[in-house]
Length: 165
Image (cartoon, rainbow, N blue to C red; front, top):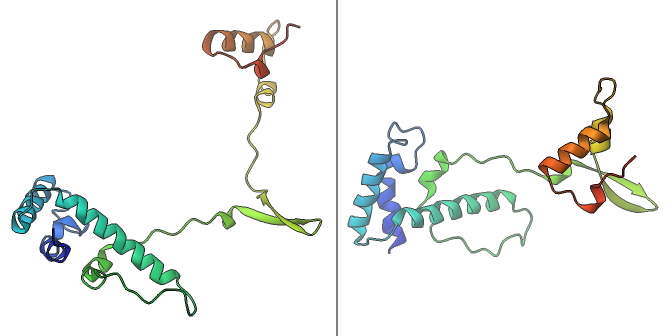
């Protein structure tokens, strides 16, 4: 399959890449467009799959070109389809990158930098802490209800088995 021809044929069908198009959500028109492209290319394989690979690679190339800095950041070679897919640039909205450094503070102990969880995020309570917040009526106990729940609903690992009191 000739990828250059595939790109040119897809460019003629905005319903395949333009989310602002009225036909973008029309599955019948998209299916007809893919069939037309496959016939024009003379193949009966899934051209949509190949298009997906090309589109994703284009997004990666855009992202990597924004992240390069300084000399020697890239080897100077450019992806062969980069120029042909420039029409997609207006239709691709990059998502903000998630970075773990936003959620981790660094503390220095003994000359070493160690990551610690931010104080703003509350710790997950343990089962005994949760059970201690429940107000039981007279004559009921946390351990009897918990034993019943574990006995009837779950197989309990040894470390969670209760001792008779």
